[in-house]
Image 1: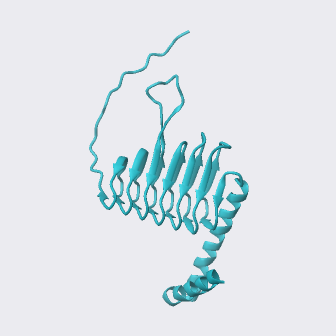
Image 2: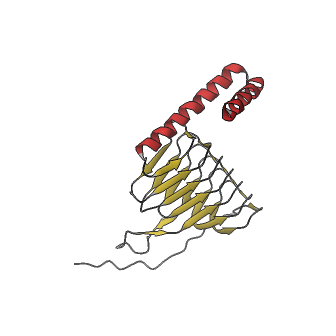
Image 3: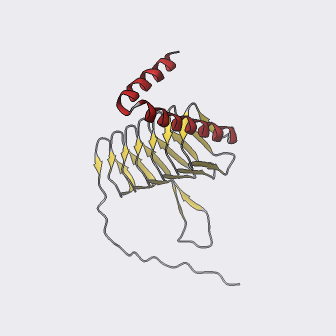
Length: 207
């Protein structure tokens, strides 16, 4: 009953600002997103723990290992064409009221956590692993962890790499490549410059 009253109050407020027709259209889109979220929960019923969350059109969850799990908090909203891929027993946790914008990609092979009220802009990529390019005979991944705190804002086109911790209330500038420890309550801006770093080419066994 409390939730119903809250929904009606929000509908009245939105109608006053947006107009009744556009408010109905917008909320219908939200409802369809919630149904899509429920569908993924049914498909991966052993791997997804959640309450109510929404995934808009073309967004998808792919889980390729029985030990991989995703925990999604309440009222998480995922916009269009986002992709979540879990494998190798990866654990993905998304806190309450997280907003994930269009075209975001999350690849989880070990552990990724996103704190409550965090907002992620379009085209952000989060990876907790790298390919072991230094050893072409060993195709295993090099994995780590990614921890994103509460109330974090991640700007468009940012790339978050393995072994990264972002503290609460911090802002990641658009286009940044992030690796390492970012303290709480700060603005991170990545000033990039071109570098070419050679590495020893591994020897290939012939036989």
